[in-house]
Length: 161
Image 1 (cartoon, rainbow, N blue to C red):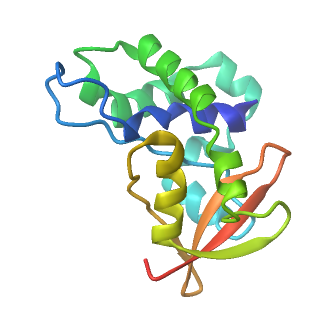
Image 2 (image 1 turned 60 degrees about the vertical axis):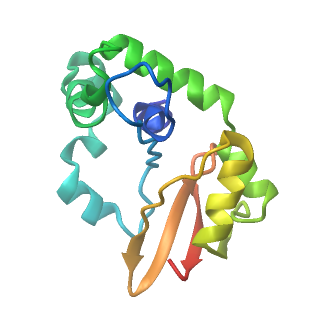
């Protein structure tokens, strides 16, 4: 449950919601649970990542920090609760994992190789906007990690980023 909540926290940031708002655009960011390759590196940058479910329910510091980091750009339009509710709606509206599978960018249980343009184009087929991708380097190879919803993660090796 915590893993899916982590992903929901950041979903809002990709889409421009309306020209009425005081900002030019929102950045829709997806972040998934770490694989065994990068767990320690992620923990150094995100100490709350490995917090137990019980600890998460007792304190809301994780959610507060994530809202401050990602949601305050739209604070004049969305309070913290509204912001996270919107991220849930966006996650439900866009099945990006299925989209990446359909475009053969991720294949359950294996690592696939795709270029950044293929990934951007696949996501744009459902969102109608092109995402900004941020990849991470593991031994000089760039990867995009995608939680597969089955308790694990699939990796897409990215070329020509």
